[in-house]
Image (cartoon, rainbow, N blue to C red; front, side, top):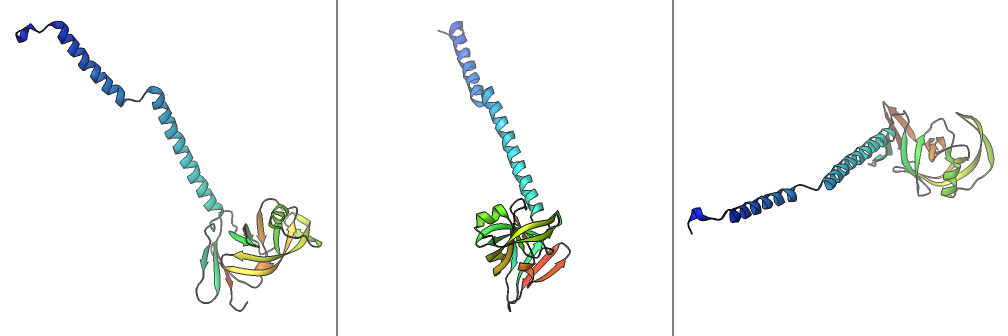
Length: 199
């Protein structure tokens, strides 16, 4: 049979097979419409989660720039250097009796003041009731003793405190019962607390 004598049906079958092969190649490379929409949706959700987490981290750093507390522990006095938060306060992590807390430095407070709910979680004992003058007026507080208070490398023992039932949240006011024997140096947005080795 000569080349020109190829039956048309055979040629049509071959062309259809080649077309089907190309169609199948394109279908393999193109995801199904539902899968494609799901992938776009998942990508947008992932981007949104990353943005939210990044913004949350930025907000936390603005609220508490001392979360990774800088401690200067060289020869001589022990120092803790705090950065002022965006709200104008010095906030830092610390420990009371080995338990983690958030401190807010308050040089106007006579003692360390612990909210009642936190005091109960820390197992602090309520002592005698007394009156204290706060920014919100006169309140009843209860005396307590803190076995150990730690701010960075500064550790003091048997520190006077009070339990304040009217204080919301979990932030502890770090008052003068902790800072009375420390040297405080404020320069710009930095507060340095220095414990001398003679204490």
